Length: 109
Image 1 (cartoon, rainbow, N blue to C red):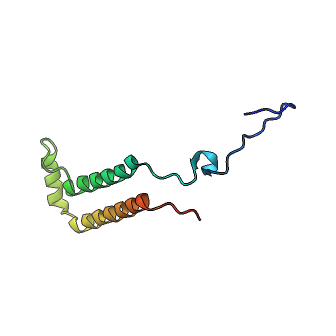
Image 2 (image 1 turned 90 degrees about the vertical axis):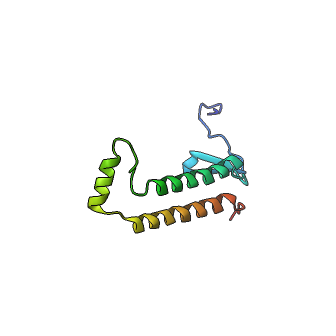
Image 3 (image 1 turned 180 degrees about the vertical axis):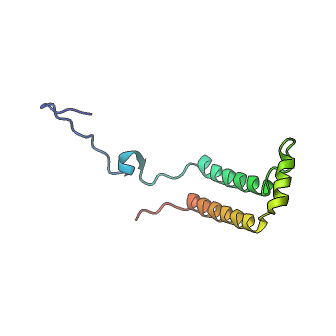
């Protein structure tokens, strides 16, 4: 930190165009847009999560070693496809809201 002549420390001045979050742990310049690669990554991650969830909705039933155990477990307990599709719908809603937020224009209140 910069020091004064009397040995006291003074906090450096922060320009007015810098916003501080979490007590200064995160900072950003006002009006900064979300980078394009990050916007694209939101889409890829959301689609990846949804695809993984739908592919393995009833477990990894085609796995060479544990597939038989998963099929037996599903036969005993039954499947919960209705609930799983509800969770998939929540994933889609979250993805849409996140992507809409990422692609919306920044508004300073």
